Image (cartoon, rainbow, N blue to C red; front, side, top):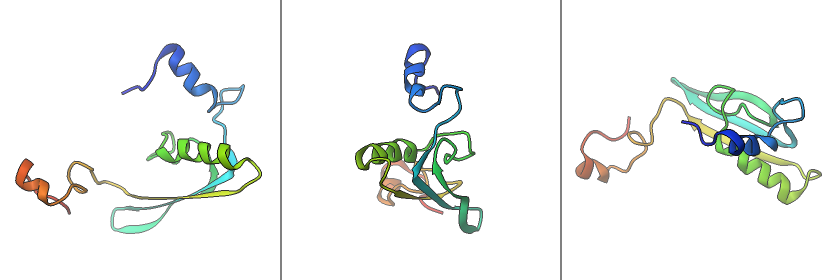
Length: 112
């Protein structure tokens, strides 16, 4: 679903896009994105400046975007920040990451 529409969406995007509507990046905040997709762990994307694109397919935003922007604001653009994102692709919070005790209450299998 969409988080915002109309004027709300315009206000949300204002700080994330430059005057030409390109996604901004924050060069003082670098992102290392490591993950497991299929049977192998490794870099999902090469290290790079924080911007839109460290979501699951290069077009989406993950929580690292807002967190990284706030770290840049807090420490200032002169201070370098490294975010390490680790994700396990193809899993679900509702199934793979719930505690085993939830099976008794909600049924189904838990884990891999």
